[in-house]
Length: 351
Ligand code: NAD
Image 1 (spheres, rainbow, N blue to C red):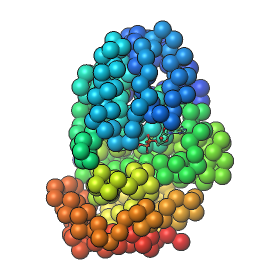
Image 2 (cartoon, helix red, strand yellow):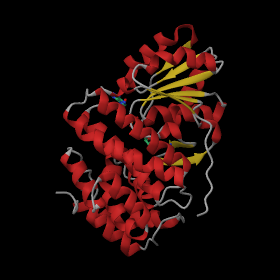
Image 3 (cartoon, helix red, strand yellow):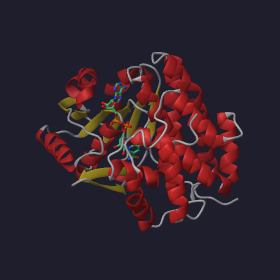
């Protein structure tokens, strides 16, 4: 066995109520003037964070939006400069974490991240910015949060349907990490345990979003899956979801949820060790079917048609998916892509 593994410099604080450690966390990093970032929907939460920080809060910027439009990133950068901020505190889902990364990319300001969904962005050096309807992404160590505070109590208000799709978004990171070209034994352990935690917790959350035990397990799973995303190179599944989100404006987490069973059905026959790990984690001998059924039974969308895609969009998706080379356990032909998209469009694996 040969592999390379590079650990990212990352401090994680985990546990119910851990948000109350934010002032100490800021002090530990030597930060005295943090700009608090959020989306408009999480303004109240941002206000609570500002209150917790007290004098260490330099201001709030609450205009975060999905896929980080460039003009929003620039407004946040200006707000940070005007406030004399020496860092940002990004509290919210992947969109808010992404905004913190956009500020860090330009200014080098350190970010403390407090994730409230299961997207996993806080664990990666990947940034994204959208300009004129096209999303650019890249990797830069400067955008990696210095400190991540996971407080399951902050996820209790995440609606059940968003929790489910966000959870499957996290599972998708682990699935692709298991067959990544830069996979390693430690990443595979994290991936298997991350999938197990989320698969166990999500049905409980769907029934009772306030179950703090299940919220804790799900957030721990999301952390592990996010760490897998940060440590490896993603393949066909993430490529397709990036196109469907970026070009067709389909909702990020829901697209991951719908496409994952079909990407797994295509790739797992060429990745037997990944398949075995997922069978153990999901307690099944048919991973694609189990993924499709589990998400559908929890109320998630079952097909790309349900999300608004049509067969007319296939040529564009296939062209984009074949435009740049990327790692995948199986060669990806136009014919295979069309078959995969046809199944996902109809939701053939869902009950
Ligand atoms: P999101 O951040 O847009 O959140 C969805 C909605 O839920 C928002 O309106 C938000 O305000 C609300 N919300 C979040 N947490 C909540 C809570 N606990 N209670 C109530 N409401 C809450 O969605 P997301 O799926 O977390 O993130 C998607 C974005 O993250 C996309 O732009 C995607 O590209 C990006 N992403 C980036 C990476 C990376 O590594 N760079 C990884 C994953 C996702």
